[in-house]
Length: 435
Image 1 (tube, rainbow, N blue to C red):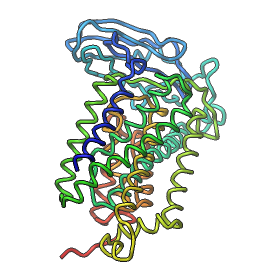
Image 2 (cartoon, rainbow, N blue to C red):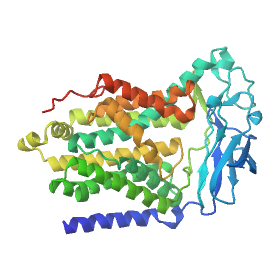
Image 3 (cartoon, rainbow, N blue to C red):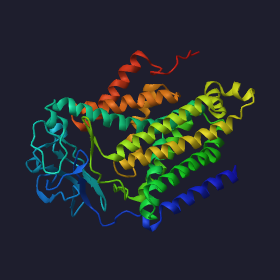
């Protein structure tokens, strides 16, 4: 037991050393608000941003540059009001939901990223260089074009959630552990890719491959030297769930200490011109990411159905004692699942970082949606996690047609509640007899 603790501590020390590399440190002189304005994947230049204090006193103004970015530094931390001047938007653009005011909190020596989602305005005049939308070229309905765009974005988000949810569902299925630290595995993958990309100067693709391998290794070592030891000591699943909350908080604040509170992009695949396919316009990276996500999910599904390890994992999920009595090495199977879960979660973090930006809370922010996808699809079922995650992603994006983007997670959670009222085991879950 002592050697196991020493080995696990040594691994954490090596992880701290990697993340604490000087080249990886975020900007220390940043204290304010900033953001990037894009319309259908293209930067929007010349938009005025007004920053005032919480009591309405003017602070500073900024204008988006040719890359769509803007930045306002403030003298002291606190809560601020950020207003986008809609009169300076292109004639074919508007803020989704009509809400052009944000109220971020700026912390000491940290920059808060403020998001304004820009969407095409039905009937607006096109700006030079901006891609024409189907509503403009074919006279179609702006509502249906926006619905198609949001459906595509919902599938994109749903596939990212599905990657993380599948790992969480596999771990729950084999160990019955509700792992609240799974979101930090997502964050770890994004941060490791950022380290090798920005800190060590590697491209995003080789950085992502290394991060996925390290994420899988961290998942293996977690079970080999921590969770496996707790299982052997007979720790109950409720106690382990509470421990996972502590592990999540430890890793989250470790990431904050080493990385800082800033949101940073990777060095590649940022400002890509939009590609129009029918009523959908998206950056090329989004199509490639969705293809990679689908391939990985299909490979994992085939592995569960066709390989010996996959069949053994399903046997362990059904009845660990019976699986052990039939000659299956339960600990080895669980370790393989932890390794695969860590690698898939790391890949989900990288995809999320490419879709948005990298920050230390990105896993925490998506954790509730991961649990919603797993629960909606059926606890412990990998394919249920995929189905549930796609439904969650679709409802999150499509709900913004009727409600404010700040409330978009409400739609997914409402669907979760309604489905579970009529089917408590989830969409693909099985009924279990209690008692």
